[in-house]
Image (cartoon, rainbow, N blue to C red):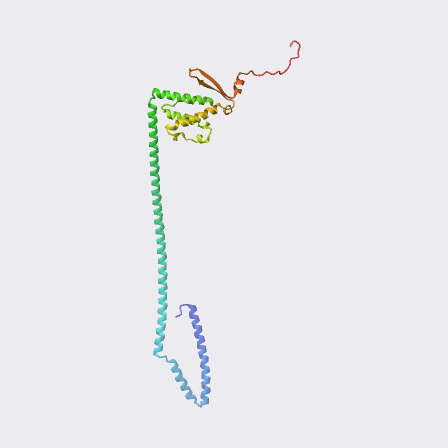
Length: 294
């Protein structure tokens, strides 16, 4: 059945054309019928009666045909309504599906965000705990080192330890003087081995080979330190004996003590320092006095 104005107008146009065609065909049929009647010798009254009967027969529609048309029309209407209902149901289901998917996506995003925030909070807490633990360990190490240092300071060295420290200082001072400096005294509470390692570390830069220069004295065992110490002191002493190694403009004295306490002073360094120190400044004639009696 037509559902819009355009469809109704199109149907009316087609119905009008059909009526027009039917009327035209009826006129043609009537003319042919009149011709046949004239040829057959039928009277006008008989022809009128026959046409009236034919008209009545055509206007009467059988009951089964009317019922069939009605049934077909109802079926078409029901099918249209069913199609519309099906489309509406499909549209509603699709809409509900999209809405459910949107809600599920939002829920997943919220869940993932919550999991990420929880994971970040856990990692931050672990990092803070690790930092606190490391800080505590570092503090404990520092306290232990301070306790050891304090014990060393409070502990007074014995006579033998003082003699050994004096010998170590004298040896380091002899090499240092060749290099234009002097050895530091042992620090308060410093052990003999710590003092020797510190002094050897000062002379390590004068080693002749890179292999010796790269030695980490803190890693050398006490039982093998004497070998490394002798090697370092020998190279530093040789560097002090080399005049070319002495700094320019410096002159220093090496004091050697003999077996009976006698001292021998040996100068090292730039000899021009000694010469300039004891030489007379040169004099120059600037002008002559040409006046009489001058």
